[in-house]
Amino acid sequence: MIYLILQTDIQTYIIAFFTWVSESAGIFVLISGVIALTWLGFERKRRGSFFNRKSDSESTISKFLRFISYFGVIVGILDIWAGAMGLILDIPPSFAYRDVTANQADHFTCIFLIVVGIAMLFKPIKDLPLSSILGLLAGSATAFILALLVPDSAVEWIAGWINPKLLLIIIFIIITALVAITVKFFVGVPQAISKFLSWPPIAFVIMVFAFVQGILLWGFGISLFANFL
Image (cartoon, rainbow, N blue to C red; front, side, top):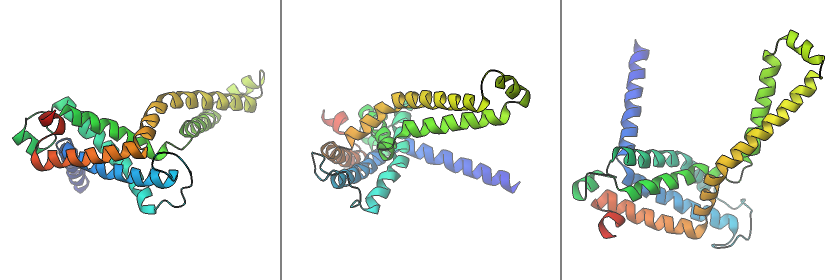
């Protein structure tokens, strides 16, 4: 009984939290500006230049900047949720915007949150060989599961045609290659978006826009695009 009560309370809190997120796009635009500021510092230190890449050394990057950049993954998920729910349910980005401007979504803000959210989601892994890692994991898991599940009678039958160990190696290589190619194809676009948006000059523009737009939405109930353009 206590477990059911606690489970119900947790579900209620989770639903309430995500409802609040979907109604607080303006706040998450502002938070996105903070993350863009860390991109600016992170990439500036790593590149050694504001515009051009001079160094790939990450030894001088502070742990705080690195932590905030990885924390951006969580913010990115919430950004995507806020933007998507705003578009789908036509939710205004803040209560102030609802009262001052219109009781409807600000479409540009929603799209901005979705795009920046995707960039945040892929920013920490854009320099990792993600496709190779997932390919190796998939190939290893497939070979391991086959070794466990294939009955001895089938192994004996297969042995009449090919060495079972050699067959597992072939399957491992095929699955690894297929998964790596598939992941590289589907993940390449969001990784490219993330790399472009975290380039210091672009990150600076995103930071300035997010701070201005977030303050206007949250504090004044107006939007740069809905009210001025």
